[in-house]
Image 1 (cartoon, rainbow, N blue to C red):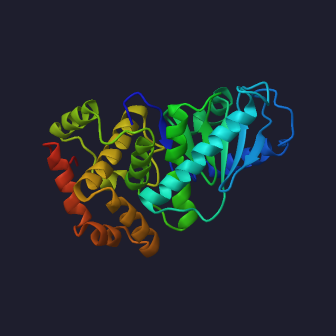
Image 2: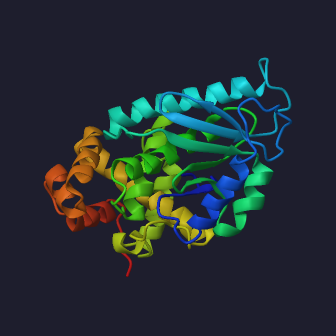
Length: 286
């Protein structure tokens, strides 16, 4: 995640989960797949594909035509289905149930959810994928859909498995970067981490092991997301992209983080963390 990119929330937003789910029920109650689209009005349009159920209420006034809501819905579902296949290929995750996705008009999303977390969010997952959308499928929307799908996939494959945020968010950041052709950290991102490391301010993994980064302020969250992504990139570079697939499938099967890392990387997680930190010429903060 770049320094100016909006942050995401991952799996485990239970503090406000019940209110979110209640809101979803209230919003979906009056919706109909045949209802007239009047733009962003709180009436969600429904469309389905093989692996997803999409609800959208973005500011598109017409349903048909090149710029109509149906084309937008089909485009979103096409991105999601491609992401589903890529997720299986790259991380070995293949959710066994259809995943619900709600794409909101930005103003409606902000009005409903902005107070639920301390940083600007492009989307989050809590049983359903919630997206702060727009009226076109651009790179930002593609990235967010890919990111949140990782969280949804883990939840669908192993609902009792609570992942530390550094792993859950790091894998999601890695997967979304690949969706837009980004392979590895940018020079600016590397330099930022090197600076933080030189000051002894890199997080320790245990400090990023809550289920999400939801309680962090904007600056702290940016560093947390970047460090989580960088650690996953380090692992992929060290052992190959396929190592992440082996890690995820082993983790889902064994439900043990330390064991999954040992089996996949033939090394302890603590040793891998220290080598990652030394890559940036610093020391792990307290």
